[in-house]
Length: 128
Image (tube, rainbow, N blue to C red; front, side):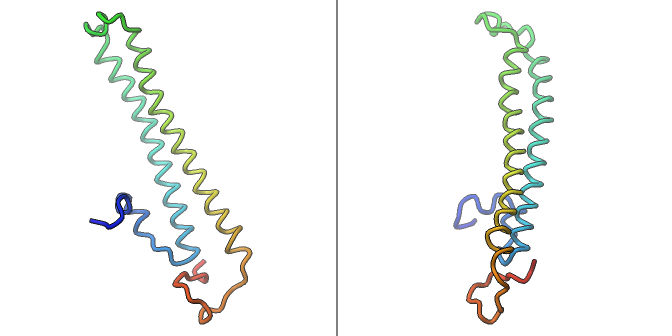
């Protein structure tokens, strides 16, 4: 078990060591791909869930006793949250692209190439 909770939950990201610009590129690309996959899964899941809710609760006696709105309306309310989660994942993917661009703007494209023997950090600027 990791000392830092949450660090080992996404092995695709946690396995990337912060060793240079290529690592940041890999991290941003992998994170973006994960966000796209998760967003698509939420989208597909929301469509499937809507169909299941409609089929399972149509004419449910307890919902009818409570004077509840139509099952379709209730299902749309529930599924709307999952669709919103899908949209937020798309936004997270976009932010990872911006993260990478900002890193390049602030560090890689601005700083002069340092000589390896003058660096104290294990961060390798030459692996781009």
